[in-house]
Length: 568
Image (cartoon, rainbow, N blue to C red; front, side, top):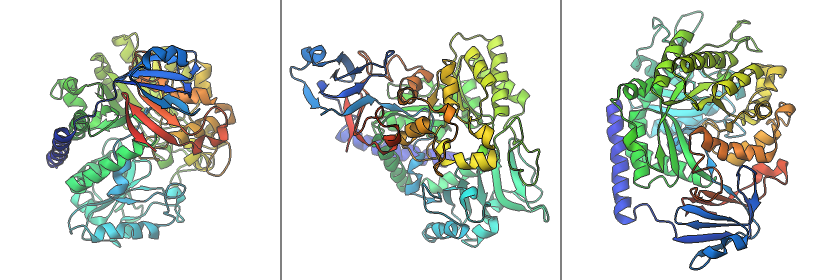
């Protein structure tokens, strides 16, 4: 099945790419441009604010006032910013490109404030058109449902999906991406029944009375089904629609470096070709996923080096150590605030036993390869810190920059250890908006919820961090993320952890120069300074003047390597 997907993906990319290359190729930027009369937030070491910048081809050559760039005006294309704000291009510190484009090819099951699903009947109705247009026996997929936002306050069952179709295998993915529900045919095709044991790092949820699977599958077992559905879902036409939708999502939001944070071989190769042929107009950071590609990378069977270009980098191994707190699979040091399935001592679970994580981290680190490790709960963070400490003792690296993805429930003592070991966290700060009320009332309780994504505590320790959206978990809306990091206001209008609010300038650094630092590209990306790539964004508002209005700011222009790839 994976071979089939590889052939389909590569065929689509090559056909489209060769056509584009024959017609246009990757467009060249103007020989010289000057941007004048702006409020330009450079994100340099001093957070300098200037009014003009000069660009030659893909590089910045001068920054300052009009006098500073005067020597570059002759023959230049002059863009008058009219007082608008310019900032460095936004770097997606963690996400799953082209996942946001999935809404173009499958049912969107998000609840408000993202979507319109309010009850299980809405899920069934949203699936029906896709069932009607899909041949019997072929997979029907959907994504984005949230059990805590449904009127029933529970996951759908396989029987409720059977009511939509018994002739199609159906799998719907939870908004967290860490679990989902299969109908009876999907379970049968996946050889899952009452006798099937839980795999390592996953759970097949079963009815306590009958012992039969309810349809809910968590973590690794859900991931296996998601991979299996891809061959039917990712047809050439669907891939094109998904890809085009995702590209627009990113460039229209000012993203100049996107990320696919956990790719299997076919996706890695397909994205590399798409980038090489100019189908992705921005830079891509693509991380091979340990579960699906790690052994091949370590053995040398899958060589990452030939794929690297200024527009494509893939030298960081993605490892997942626990699940999602809003899915009750995040691994905590203390029990969840609300007893889970009646168990007051439930703390979630790790994907790998601690000893196995130590072995994996040690093996990858010994090669000198950078790692990005997903850890939401504080017990998972403890395991990662322990594993990396041992790896550093065995094979010391002066500047490892291990990226700790999410770090959602990081404690102060863990932030101290991150600083000591050269670990750099990336916070999913928009959690405070999308799930803040439920973290306070259901998952974490008030005390732990106010410390989620502890940006201010990281600042106090001079600990380098970024922020991210994990798209398509939530939409690719960096200004919403920026607003959430600064204000920490939930969908219910409550402040979730006032003490963890940070100034807008620091929040801007978290999506520009800090994010570039994490991927070892701060020498060429992330700030507006001479010698760096001309990755630039023009906004219609100023994030520094009114924190409450940041989410309403729109991107007017996105420039990647001197080339304007979006203009509103």
